[in-house]
Length: 456
Image (cartoon, rainbow, N blue to C red):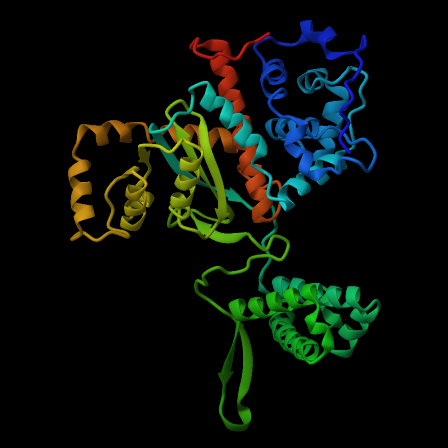
């Protein structure tokens, strides 16, 4: 239940330490600009108005999540930051003697936003302020680029991945029928998956034993009534997928000497499952030599260096994936650009045609990938790319690299802090929000004098 009772002031209020706070710093302006924007009413959907004890104000927790992203702190570190750091208390508007809240509050509130698909509330609220201030406008030039983000996992080899999948299935069985998991492993001869083997010869035999044991387990469970359990069904599906994507049977010899061997499947496999710890992480590449495992963040920025939108996607997606839907969302928000500037990855005919229907001109270098040189659209692009407008717009394309660097090196988007695509999107949005707030404060302090937001 949300507490609507106004808090009584005291001599411990943060206003008494204002003389200690840097007047040009992030925390000073965060209290004046950001805290009033984020309101408890924006999160009223998550609280029962009549039942339950008085909750910690959700606007306070959301503000703490923004500061946490800016400081690049874990939940436990943020708990200590709120409790002991005066500038952080000031930014959140907390009294000096406030003990803050437990780190699990941040974790649970984050999960609440992700599960209910409400992660964009804070980002959209601040973006609306930028629109009101004229810092983001419709029909302006926007720059787009994609940057890779490394997943927060250790990448297992084929044997370890199959073992993970087998253990997950047995754990699901044990949860469905207490005590049956270990007994089933013993019955099907799978006890060895809990033992480690480091010898090369044993590893070759281990792969064969793992695949055969997995097939026995699948056959046993599919014949039982337990296969209808949703979690067990999902774990079985992943086990089958891992076997298909990573192993293959090979025959050697003839007649009585005929043998079946299990070998690791070589070569590329589209949409390969990399790990069960983070099932959404994927193999990807930024170039022929630069490969990674994780996700991609698609960043959209205007000429004033504000992020209009950011979108997380799987690491194996093409850079241009989802651009059309992003432009549709920007159009609905009233900030659809006139020109969209990108690199050669965005020069494909289908994307350019889709954007043309939205009255957006795609500005990108000509490439031979995904284009038809005989099409009228391609011929028009050749003519446009010879104009002064194209030359001027391509000069600003590199600006977004500075924003990518800020997101990755200063705001922690070089590596995933959480696991799963939904939580990765949360990280992208809050990193972009922190970047926009910093850019806004920079303009507020250093000019130009076009902002109407007061500093007092």
